[in-house]
Image (cartoon, rainbow, N blue to C red; front, side, top):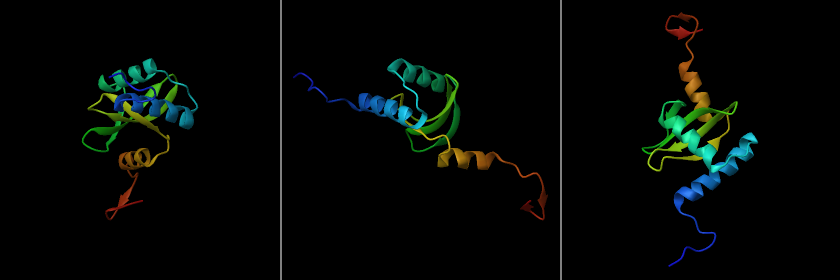
Length: 110
């Protein structure tokens, strides 16, 4: 049975969704090769891990063509799920956890 026109498998649908979100949130047009190079960067340690969202999805920051992009990466499918805004909750939470208070008095950060 031949595949119907306009019917995609999950990985193809994720790729289409990710490209749309990259354009919508960052104003950049990506192709499949761009997504593939970002996946390779994540797998080879070229990205910055932010937080694990579930057993298979994690949040990463990737530098690509001068943009700092926040992505959700599916470890099972080895694919980028979507692009998040650069000021999303996950980024704010991770940077707040990294901030060290300059002074502590009586166990309270000042």
